[in-house]
Length: 146
Image 1 (spheres, rainbow, N blue to C red):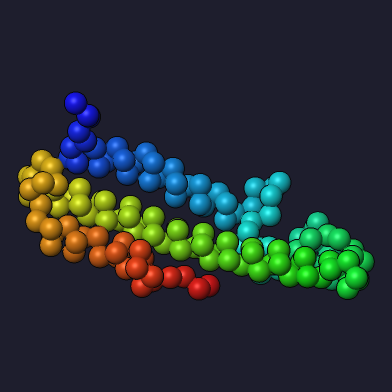
Image 2 (image 1 turned 135 degrees about the vertical axis):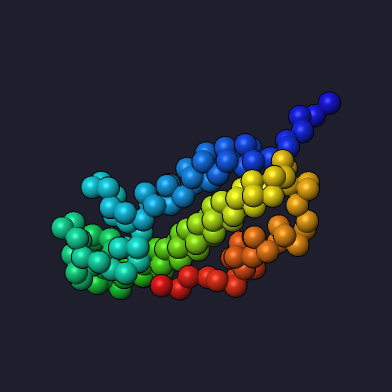
């Protein structure tokens, strides 16, 4: 017989404080400079650092960036566009998982307040109301553009 997971308060807290928290921290780590890697936001916005040259951002390829016969400029543009898309993706994931974390806190609070021991006793509408922001994030309702 397969293991059955009971979505009770203890399990929700463990999931929130474990994988959800770890994922949020990893997104934060990717969004901040750590000394060895430039954050994707900086690459996307063309932020100048000690290791970049204004005329060849984001890659340091010198004259290749200006030489049309080698497509260095196109390569830099492609890297910049990809970085911009990844930066938007990271912001959207951060919003989504912050909302998931908030919804889990609200769900745990609601379960505790009403002395329900698991989600089976919560009505579908109550659950949907608590997770409304997450639903919006998943359906594209609150995408981050900046």
